Image 1: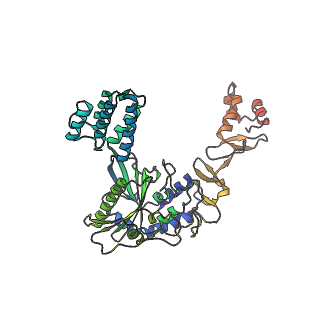
Image 2: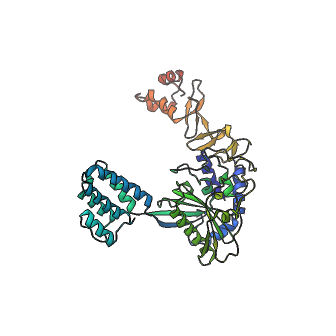
Image 3: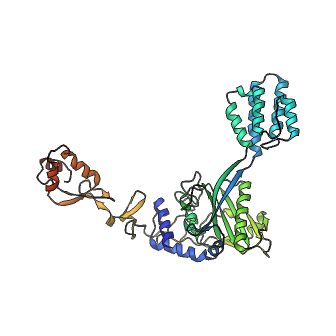
Length: 447
């Protein structure tokens, strides 16, 4: 629990949030209590990572050919051809050959389509050649490649006809900080649960403290630990109870191929944990889905599961389970339940000092280099008066009293002596009788 507390603190520091040990531990204790069942279940999976509190998957995610994208780019290529080809019949031949090439929506073409391209396009092409290569040869033959926009349009068309395989790491997680960072500010996208500016920040606590919510997200394959720190490439909520799985909205885009892929990954993981055949019945009708879920009393998450998502039941399930989604939001400062979109109630703003670990009023701390330090753990420079967290140096003020000064003032104090031939003696006697040091001190520097 101590490591989870440190990670929770880390997220609060990152977003400059008010928080206290009481509020954080109240949330973590409720998390441990409510997620106990899911933790016990997911720990049965061979890919369970105890530090990450998640099942970790590595997989290839393919981007399929999107027909509407191919069509749009092909129309643009036809427009370029119309500007380059003056003969009507020749332009018609190009269009027929191009349409034949793209209408199979495949990276390679059938022999029947190749014959059309040979006849109308007048080019040689063989079975097994990439569609994009054949289109390139066709455009060169008809002079379309001479258009100033050709290279850019052809590159887009080529990409759209060649499915891309991407290695990804995915997690089915129960880690408290994965809920807090479900809309990480380092993402290229954000949602209303973002802790920096989202209107449903408290919803991250609600998902964290119910007994059905799991968070599924993908990160770059280079990420090997501390997954909550990494930007999310995609993310969605899954809810599980008694052989029933609910898949909610996918962020940042609700693509059907990704939805199907991620659902199949989670279904297989749950079946593996249960030790049962991976056979599910899928329900997508809104009336069937809506009957199975309600928001918990006092919960503050955005209920997108009321508008998006689907329900899966293991074939051995007699009836779908009912999900109560979201627990009451508990203030991260005092630990009391509250009703707002923020992470805390109207209690005093507090923070936890990174140095001593004490919870102190926020006004009695300073945010320096990404963390809070209480005034008791900071030093005041005897020269510039700044509050410093770091190495301090001894010096004498103008009245001869020993004080501490910051590194910048310490270096400035040595500048007048840099060329002095007796600077080694000054170190011994502490500059007490040095004329240059006295003059500098009188001008406002502390020595």
